[in-house]
Image 1 (spheres, rainbow, N blue to C red):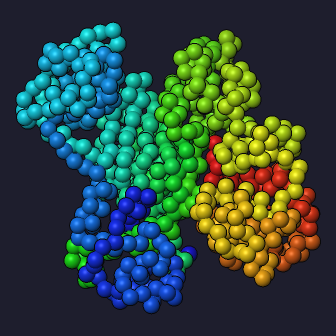
Image 2 (spheres, rainbow, N blue to C red; image 1 turned 180 degrees about the vertical axis):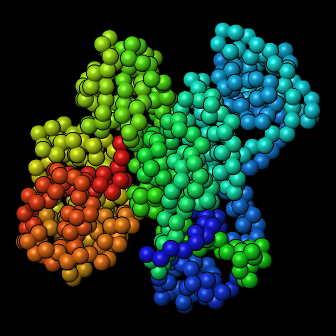
Image 3 (cartoon, helix red, strand yellow; image 1 turned 90 degrees about the vertical axis):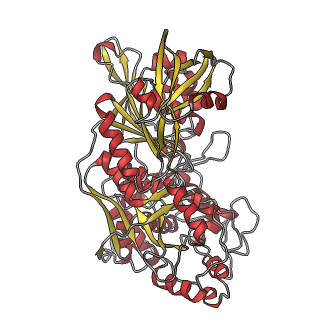
Amino acid sequence: MIRRLLRQFLALGCAALLLVTSASALTVDQALALLEELYVNPIPDQARAAQSLEELLASLGDPYTEYMTAEEYQQFLSGVEQDSSFVGVGLELTLAEEGARVVSVIFGSGAEAAGLQPGDILTAVEGQPCAGFPLDQLSGALMGREGTYVSVTVLRGEETLSFRIRRQVVEIHNTTATVLPGDIGYLDCRSFGQETGRYIREGLETYDSDVQIWMLDLRSNTGGVTTAAIETAGAFSGGGILLQMRDREGHYAYGWYDKDPLTDKRLILLTDSYTASASEIVASAVRDTGRGISVGTRTYGKGVAQSVLDETNSPYFDGDALKITTDRFYSAGGNTTDAIGVIPTLLVIESDTEAVALLLCEEDPGEESCEGWLRLRLVGEDFYVNAAAAAEASAVTLRALLGALAPDVELSLGTAEGWTDITTAQAVELFDAAGDSRWFTDAAASPYADAINTLATYDILRGSGGGLFHPGDTMTRAEVCAMLSQALNLYSGSTGSFTDVTTQWYASAVDDMARMGFVEGVGDGRFAPEDTMTCQQFITILGRLAAFLNTDAYEFSQDPPVLDGGAAEGYAPWAAVSLLLLTDFVMDESGDALSLLAALDPEAPILREEAAALLYHVLTGLGLLVY
């Protein structure tokens, strides 16, 4: 592998799709020359026949490579930075019965200097009651000329307090830091701009001594500058390689962080389906370094980075710009986020994300006071839940948390005698959470029950309905495509690759798997979707998946060692490389996985339980599924 300096990349997610290509000063020939030099994929033949810039860029089929006029480029840069300012007191509010509840206090504002805190309830402004007034009217009353003061009355618990707050210029950054009740440090990161790393650093340095846990909110953060993402991840993980980039020539660049971590406190990330690109760099770095856990939904799945060409680095531009996909990026552990995204430690629906995360923010109650508590060992760190209290005050949230736990999570119950180890199933029964369990009712008898139900917990496996998986059944070629496309999060909706796969329920899955190069037809434009898949066919596909997902697996597949004839006895030559990759690379630390591989008859049909177990070992072996 060739090491090169890491350029500054913009790794932008779905927000970039909002830009519209307009009339340009850049010519087709100039754009084509730039693409032939930098674009990550081969240039299609139809691109060279394009008569307009719009036609040229459309021929790539890449939503992230686009031309921007000068006006659009400025909008683009502003969208990345998301910084602004206004004159006011610096409070983020939400309506409450008594008036307005303080959600956060902006760092450096007059409200912070006066001593207001998140959770305070504003009941009066300048003596006028707040109850029943719209937020815009309350916000207007708090704003005014710089240097003037406003008096507010606040309810804090059962105590009524008065404050006189100075109005001043308040800077709104793309990242803000505050301390929530319970000594929870909260970092709200909405994008990764040039200054985001500094905002993160200042937040940690200001509040770390006051908190016992950090929460980094990456929900709806669609990306930004990769260097800012590296700085953010490194602030928690410390030094090392946190990002890998591979260009069209197969050369690698590395994103390094060379400083010590700024905190050793526990960390919880919040993610959703709009957590994209640079945010996924942070989420995957935290996962790969074991620095924290994530709660929420699977992230967007953007695994490519763009370089922006403008007047600072190319003679073709004058205020306008061209954004080109130049590299594929991979996590600290060499895993892609392309399509698959980042699978959270605890997969919960968006409406439960914040509440479940807050349940996990309790401090260790100690041996003598742990009765009614749960202790969860997640990614090597202990998290504590006051389950007895939650069962009364927020039973729905507790059940959502228990429903997100894999069968083999390390779990302890606090009793009068101290901590006692229990299983997830026992905790589910104890706190009446069976209705929130995602496990298959017919998987218990399978020797691979834990693997099957873990994949079900993370919505990687879906059964046949009614809570059934049918673990002992064989699989058709189409069913394998459906299973693996679900695991990879492929949902293009496209069809047409094969004449015998058109409108069936599995059509898009087959098409997506073929488009990615994981499966092939049987000749004459056919796929034979209803044919039964053999073990060696499944292993071949799984090896291709591993090479797509992980850089080391990819390099291994490009130059594999010679396969010993005995190890591949009964396997066709086309299956040998995948067998070797899985045996000697992906699953080399898992005795169970190796035993399963050795027991398979290459010509026998693959069973659903065997396919699930092998998929589980690939995802956990590569570090894509961590809990």
